[in-house]
Length: 51
Image 1 (cartoon, rainbow, N blue to C red):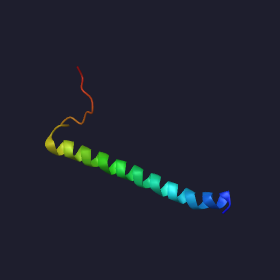
Image 2: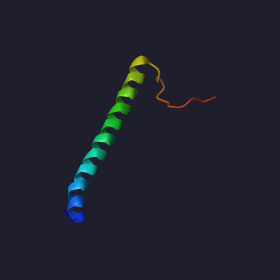
Image 3: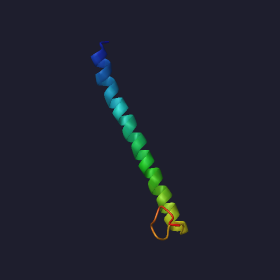
Image 4: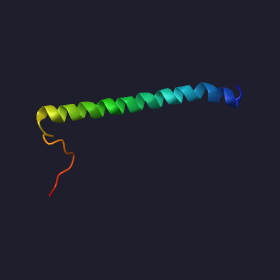
């Protein structure tokens, strides 16, 4: 096959893989945030501590 055929076939696969990875990372972050809120660790909605 010509190089441009590999590009036509490969580009959607790469885009789909990236979308799945980004979606998974977002879901994991949302679960982590929900778990922190439920356990009361993040009661003031701040992700950093002030000395």
